[in-house]
Image (tube, rainbow, N blue to C red; front, side, top):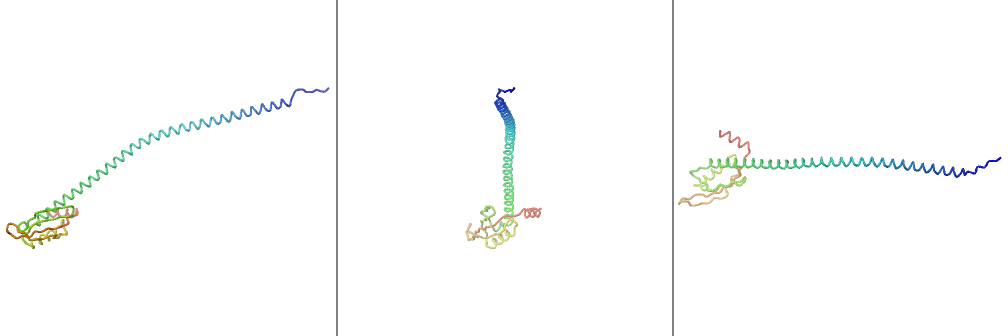
Length: 193
């Protein structure tokens, strides 16, 4: 006798295969989504740590900006102080030079034969205006000034005859260069002592 299986085996196998494929796809999809979720969580964690690090670095930069601002202010203050010191040194040197020039002029002047009416120092230029009894006295005064370590390039810029209190005198104007190195000033100071 023949047995006929009336059950639709092929259809059952197709359904079983379709069900297995469906569960396989669902499993793969769930696995894929789990992997994507894990990657997203890792990226989120990494982004969070990067944001935290960025915030920390920004705060650290702000503290360094304050320090840099202080350094710049200190450098500006230092430059200002150095500028003031150089001005003080220049003024000290110029005032010292003026004292030496006045001393030289006073020592070289023959007060019994010559009188100064004006003495004007502008930087390294000195103008002397006065009156003398004769040209010889003016020439001797010029030579004496030229021999000075603080006065050089003595030139007679004007000479004329003038009458003062009924006496003929020579009015004159001298142009000189003034200046000295520190070594010359030290040498002069040692010589005086």
